[in-house]
Image (cartoon, rainbow, N blue to C red):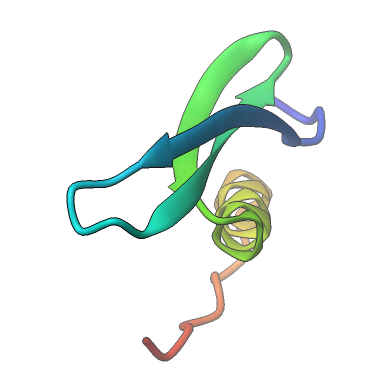
Length: 63
């Protein structure tokens, strides 16, 4: 698969601890390939998926 991963908003949800989180759906060629909480996490996950598919060693991100 060589198409780019696209990031789409999946809405907001109020979690039990009263913090709001934005959910993001990652798609590639019309198929869902992942989910993320927060836009920055979605960008990082999309980059990771693309690197793995390209055969590159993904960067390790400190938590």
